[in-house]
Length: 89
Image: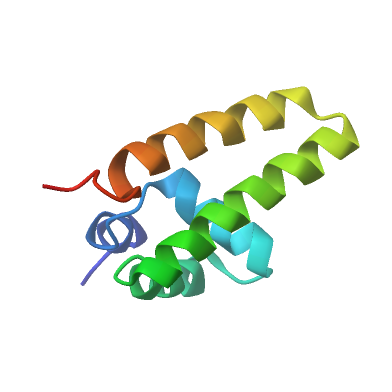
């Protein structure tokens, strides 16, 4: 039987990226894993995940949650290193 951690690892996304999708889309983590795994395999989907992270950064900034802003910026940095155009060989 697969654990949720196994599913996260199979999704090609980090746990933080999955949690951003779950929070942004107001869905459970398991559904976010499935959605993220689907989105990550298309250029439009990759842009959509990027937009979710940026949107959450703006919401945290607006709320004055600077700790969350920093965490999301680190998430975005990692995401761009792995999934930006030209990041993969």
